[in-house]
Image (cartoon, rainbow, N blue to C red):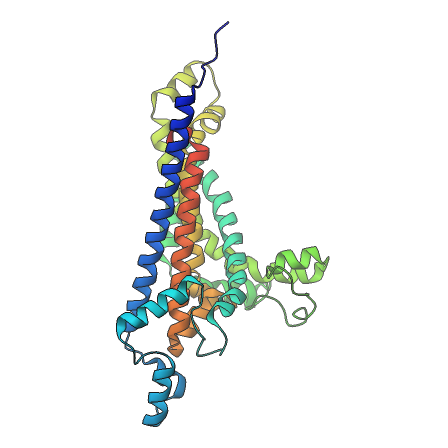
Length: 352
């Protein structure tokens, strides 16, 4: 009987020190990234040729009112004082008041963000559950008609702009065939029948047992989510095919086949496990891009989400909202990269 390896006290102390060191490095890395992001958004906001005073008061304001509002906003202070004020407020998620809605920007973002998260989540599910099997099968049957079709599909999806796909989708599936509901997140008839809850209408309607409203919400979300999901699918399938093709050329695959393992079990049971970490990163970053890049689809489908809010703020010169949204997008990428790092450690013990 083989004796189990014994961990000494010195080894346990070394493990704890290594864990604390990694944790401190991670915290410092995140803090520096966020500080750099806040600094960048501040100076971008100051460099843009938009006057927040005129955006609030209009072009015909008197000089006296202009100066009073400028003092009220702190714009008469030196730049470093303005930066310090902005930094201390941003750390408490205080991005100021929105010039278009007259509400705190953070409240506006909290109101519209669930709509975008719901849309992007449905889209990433579609992209992942279609993209990964398609990429694996394309690698397994490389050079076949199926492989060529997947590559052609990816190329076509990449070549078409989202707003054009959205307009074509509405024209065919809503106006032509009538298979899905039109623009918006929920029909007017059901809009006031859903009690406020999580902000995610699919979940709220399901929890409240309001199945008619659930069907209506699903009918509204399926088309924009599918269009976004197909874009994610094109990227995920291409990356999956690339990772899997590399794995299938390894010697352990040949050994497994020589030992009599079936092709499907070799691919899904062994090769797929080795690309899981890379795929987790691809899916996580695709999700971040969906959250940030759904602007055009939300505009075409009149989706009351984060992208549409940002577009409206840009058109109105609402810099508080624009800078707040930019910072939130940056935080999303930082958080998702952090989750990817943790996934690495869970899925691949060699990285611990």
